[in-house]
Image 1 (cartoon, rainbow, N blue to C red):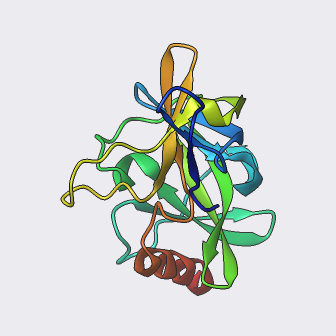
Image 2 (cartoon, one colour; image 1 turned 30 degrees about the vertical axis):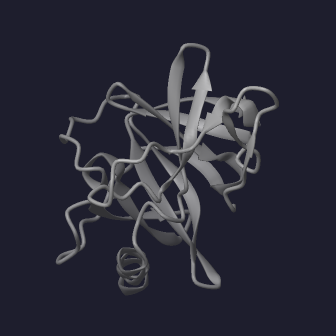
Length: 174
């Protein structure tokens, strides 16, 4: 999804026109995030994960999903958040991630799935600039919903291409 911005009539505020749409929202701690619903394949209960040696810490391992081995990443660890014990609300969001010309099915562990929101272009602002020291390329925008802010993620950019290739390799090896 390309980022296109326009200025809202008479407001001087930038509007994210191509990011408008439906997002599956979920929580990591107190923070709320959203993924484009079209990238989500399914949501499953946390199941037994087989650890794969010599993988990055955020790669929890692989699961057998109806006969297909898919890698699973812990989004808390990927975002350098403190690890947390799993609860009955912890689940895996199965997503399709672009890797070059192909797609990789990957599981993403989150604390809790919230809801599907339809977020209009006027409700989305660009990701804040933190300077060159902080990479925010994986943030599509900031959705303003009621009185809260939902970070809209570009699942294709959450992992670098090198990390994604390693994760895809984990599934092929298993």
